[in-house]
Length: 124
Image (cartoon, rainbow, N blue to C red):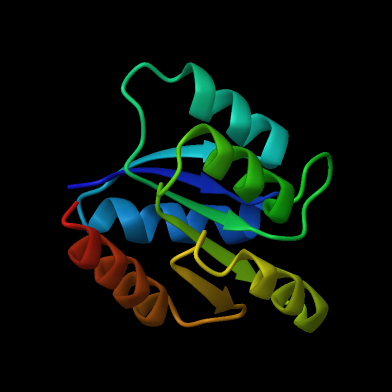
């Protein structure tokens, strides 16, 4: 299946998402913030098929991460997540760069369906 970079600064959020993705057969690499994710993205020899990132994080937020990844690899599929309305509004500026913006909290079934839809759409 897909090789996914999962980015969230909260272990209690990241862990169940990672398990859900692994259950669906995906290979998942975790990152704790945008800077950590950008390092994984640029140094991982195998590369990634998809990035799923929280928006609000310390060091580098998901918006800055998205802009950096899109500059390095235009068209790369990115899904953002947020529990904050103002962050969702900021993500509107990224239309065309992101596949979807998921509003937390969400049921794992909804998360898995959204990721499956992106993977199918992109033929990953």
